[in-house]
Image (cartoon, rainbow, N blue to C red; front, side, top):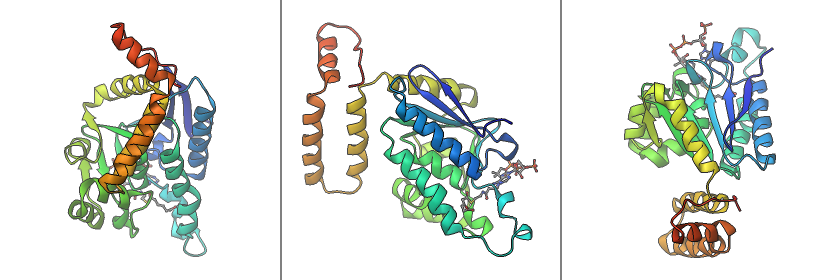
Length: 262
Ligand code: T3D
């Protein structure tokens, strides 16, 4: 049988493709395990310096597989707090804490926790027409996989509340216009654009990129004074890295830098 997550290697990066296209790549425990394994493999491989997550077929990810929640086949209500804690929170934390840049290419419809996973990544690209269907409230659930946090931070309370209460939809284009994701591109360009971008980050100064990510994230939580101190500390670290020396040297020698990722 086909693996529910396919692992490929690209130019300095790993590509993880959600591969349950008959359900628009809905989450099962097996797909969660496949993603966690793929992330562990990518983390352990020194030749891998970035990760790209995307979906097979016409969808990106339809959230939890609802066939596994069929009330007709269960003795009583499921313990969703167990499922959210065990699977979704673990995955969102793993992506957020991953030590290499994680890029997401939303190739088609994303719903529920599928949106949460896409928004947990450092950079999210989407196909212009891809529907982002928040969903949850339409089946009697609440936003999870970090969506109540990412929607509110990036869109503000009015838009987050409207989307969450109605379970409404945005297109990839609207999501980019609203500042929810990095960019939307025509569907036919998405895979190439995402791969070029991931390869470019993989060739980047790894330590500086890691510190940059932490700086941008910290900025949302603290006052300017604290952020200035954080920048000072981070720049001190970056300034001691071989990649910085190479960056300056390449500039002075009028050539492209060749970062070792150190
Ligand atoms: O349970 C817990 O552990 C708690 C955690 C919850 C996290 C969550 O993610 S809750 C949210 C779960 N997801 C949804 O509510 C979305 C359900 N799906 C949809 O609303 C729609 O399918 C879409 C908006 C995603 C796409 O619509 P459309 O019209 O493009 O496609 P479709 O025809 O509805 O779906 C195509 C097939 O995929 C279809 O199968 P079939 O009839 O061809 O055999 C459909 O049943 C299947 N599919 C889509 N989403 C799911 C799914 N099968 C299982 N689970 C799904 N989530």
